[in-house]
Length: 523
Image (cartoon, rainbow, N blue to C red):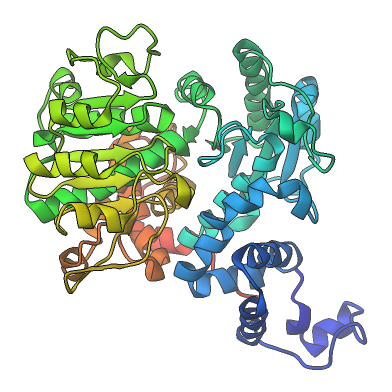
């Protein structure tokens, strides 16, 4: 462990460090104070991102002590939205390797290569192909910061011990010709293979990962939509896996919906929901809402009938011939239309969810049309980064006379309208996946299923105080995220034990068990 100026005089003498460090022996708190000064002097968040990643390489304890000292400030810097800029410029800001970099030409040697990782007890792997990063599309190896940042949030937000976390970029090539032509691009300068070949590559990886790290949980992140859906179905009953873009996004959206409906005093089973966007995120959220509605007594058919999808081809209805397997269950007897306002008129939604990556898609006409048939519209423009949001919270509040309940994919500032201040929520997956990770760490379940994510959603919603609900807030405050996620992890772990999915003995006090496993940054 590198402690820098925190090495004691005795440690300096025994480790041969005398004369190699400044004289002062400092506490971790003093070191954090210095780091905060450095960060305050940086001109922008991308420079703060670069600084913090360098710190994570040189002194992991100090990095986590800094980030965990003020998560509301630092999570947006180490992850979304700053990480979007880091990905776009990755080949140009690259300093040193973090995690592992596999590529498709290692297919027959994945096990051999994975054994190069110095830590042998890996509990979680976050792996991305870079095929669909945030709202940026296919950026190949430039997506390498994503699994790094995701796993950093496991620790910063939920206290999952960092030594058992392995971020991996699996380079299968990229369709992005501009990146392939960039002299500083760090990945394969090849087009991705066909889906069957991708499956064979990932099959080889999954087999190797479980051989080298038995019982490892593999978290799939930011794969191309079709790949994401297909690979989750391929492995979910065979290995310990989940896909955060599908299940995590669905869970955090459901959490916001649950809070909004608690504010309105309405049941989920009574809602009409329209999605703008029908990729893996949209259908993933829709499928989880169906499961949650079934829990309130609806049949699967009744639940699906209350959900409509709209994509680049228009409203998804039975006459469409271009639908994939995940979209077909939501094709209903709607009148065909490629106009979102017209779709809103037909469906009369009480909840409007944007996962389209089309900035400004929720126009004034769309929102006002919704508000005419819904007293308190629930509007979630979830696409990110910021410029991809379907509308801003300010627009949603203004066009509904302050009646909308709003959450976005990134944090927007408070909005004051007619003397009243509104606090739009951030439906960010970091409320969910770190807690899932901590629960999995504790229980070592046989598999991960959607019921765990539904429980995580409800646990998250239950932690929004009445005072915050009165201000329109739909998610817990971020300044105490560690306590929030431990509570969520405890609820998920209880569900895992109750359903007989755990492979460890149930402790007498699950909360105390969870807390004992949690990481604290200290020397």
